Image 1: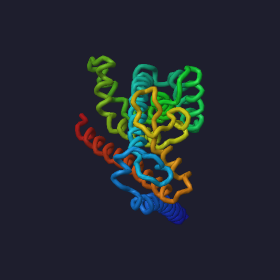
Image 2 (image 1 turned 30 degrees about the vertical axis):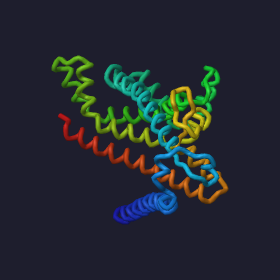
Image 3 (image 1 turned 90 degrees about the horizontal axis):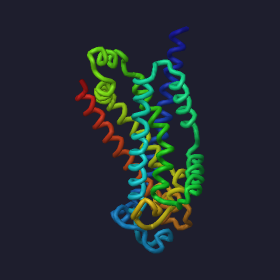
Image 4 (image 1 turned 180 degrees about the vertical axis):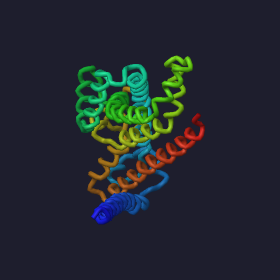
Length: 279
């Protein structure tokens, strides 16, 4: 009987794996099939020209640059908030602290908040502060979106580390700051992976930047100017009745997918590098 149950669950797991793999291949295949014919060097290196959304010449350099600026600023803000907080929860507070439990419960709630809610909150906050749709507004809103992901991931990685290491360092006379420096090196592969997850979520989200970052065909010159993003560029191109522009949307989606894959491979490279250098 146990053998039969094991075989049944094994078949279920294989089927589930095939379904997930098939969906991934189908999505990537559709993007590549429709995007490659419309992809050109001009798409990557030029700004949208007059009538770009009607099928005329131009590219999405504005959206590529805007996405890069927004996600870079958002990740920097999130790390500044997440790393000290996670270190404080795990190495300065008691292991079964009520405050730690409340903060972790807050992480879980924030993880379940839809991105459009973050976008609406960021928009309301910008109106309250007298800000207009801008690069700075997009950075702040995307940072709010990915910070719970980063904090929860960092926290899980930190809690999986054997507590004997921190106890041993303290028993040898290390200060908590010195202990955290050593532990951070051990946790770096997990932190890189967690940062990748947050980056992938932030760079591909459209709802958070729809009303906060705005959209422009130009490159952002400052934090107070609007900034285009690839998800919104794809959205606007797919909304065009011109078939050529719709095909360009798949080319833009291919560019976005390529950026995420580059981040994935880079994260794996640095993760393995840090793993080899750990003590």
